[in-house]
Image 1 (cartoon, rainbow, N blue to C red):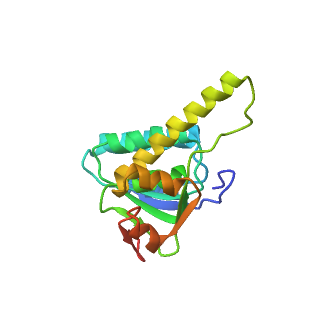
Image 2 (image 1 turned 90 degrees about the vertical axis):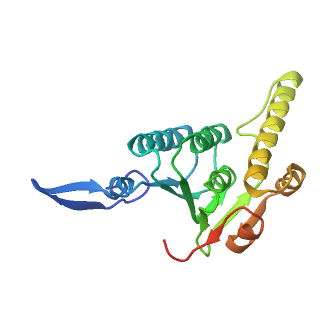
Image 3 (image 1 turned 60 degrees about the horizontal axis):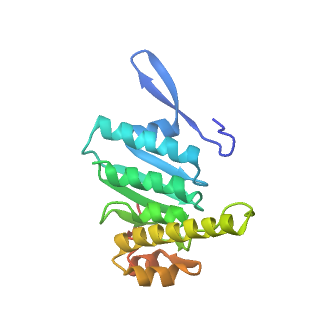
Length: 199
């Protein structure tokens, strides 16, 4: 199957009525495994929220694994997913494969304590939120945008502080510039719990 960007293989499953074809993503979902891949957008977040809610309905105590390989994206959409991840009763294991930058890093570190895992060559990057798109208008309009951006900065830093044990001041100093971490550095800074070489 080709979903527009990525070639996704179909798999065959034998049943009493013969062979059934399904996507590999459907098969992984049956095992309570989800994928956060590519840019974080309103649409991708909506899909992940639906999946989380469905899996909680199926088994409120069953663990879920969320694999992340993303450059980040929309902060407001990402925070909606973050809130749902915190609200569901299912324990959520996050696994960073490749990279988790910006908003994706916040989602990665919000996995349940002890369940935030990185592959050996995975990387994280945290920074202050950025202004999206062209900004223009009156001085009052620009001031409102700046105030909203500063509020978002405080929210994002609070999330990082909550999940790393660092003070808000330490986080704000770290996110003032792009701060990248390899797997061992992320472990040392409290962004991850384990570096794994087997999934």
